[in-house]
Image (cartoon, rainbow, N blue to C red; front, side, top):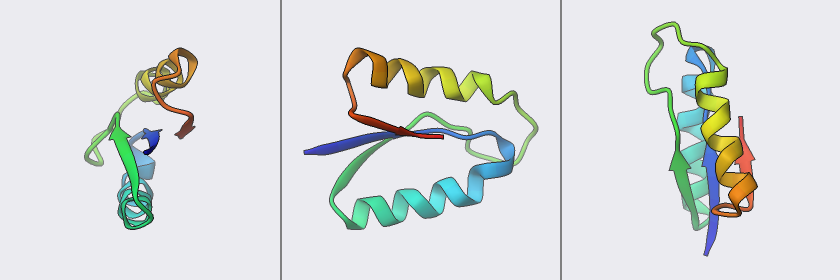
Length: 64
């Protein structure tokens, strides 16, 4: 099984959701670390959890 972690700040929510749909069509399992709406957030709060999953080997790749 191919698993990818994905995360973004408020400016990337639409693109993240688009990519999740495309990845799932290609049989990837996606771990969505947020954010989930256009409310202003700090990017590191979402980048760090994605990076941790990659570092620990829980997922092979992350998209930010």
